[in-house]
Image 1: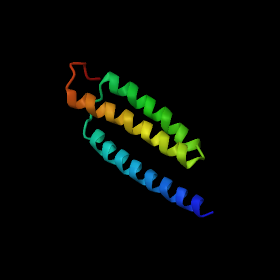
Image 2: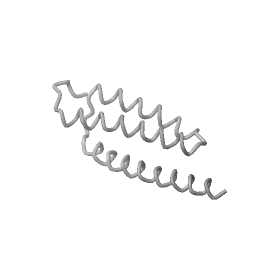
Image 3: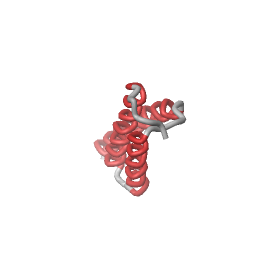
Image 4: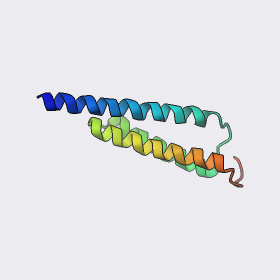
Length: 89
């Protein structure tokens, strides 16, 4: 029983860390008002992954989904910082 409590505590800590990272990236993304086409595709992918997050019951899987969302948001941020020549929409 003690192991389960400890494992749950660790998962909750991981969840909190990932949520804070995602929140910080969301704030950075909000600074950009004109998404580019590639960014829109990634945002659509993020929304699809977020739908999985809502229906998932397992805390471990939720953490994995949040990490996946973090990776996608990081791609958008790197793309924005790279200053690609793609046209704005």
